[in-house]
Amino acid sequence: MDQLLEFVDNHWMLCSAFFVLLSVFIRYEMSRGGKGVHCQEAVNLINHENAIVLDVRPTKEFNKGHITDSINIPHNLLAERFVELDKYKEQPIILVCAQGHTTGASGQLLRKQGWENLYRLTGGITAWEEQRLPLAN
Picture 1 (cartoon, rainbow, N blue to C red):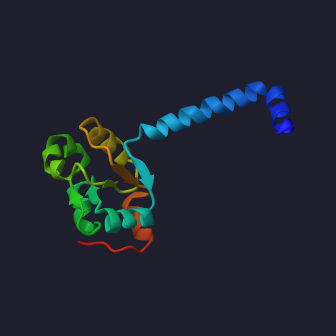
Picture 2: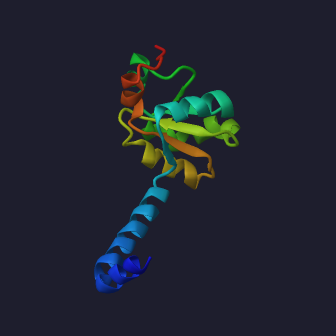
């Protein structure tokens, strides 16, 4: 412990920069519109917490393959179609896109409309396919 305090005392600028960057990173992650979950965590949410899967990819991509029982509302139409999701407001919602990049923006839109229990599938449908998890057509 003494060595840690000595290090901090000798390198206070480095330690200050570390804590500033850490706080910026934490704040950024919290603003991303939901917690990132990996495929197995998503499966657990679906099976044990009755999570709804919301696929925000374009309909054409969705029709090529999607997670079973998922709902497709493309990201560009999400703001117009919030009403369709009202009945799921109390359930966890897992947001899915192609590679996990669009779900943050979709989550922010949903959070502004009052949804709180949001998750983002890390790696998107691509990660789901790589794990050889089932897809529906």
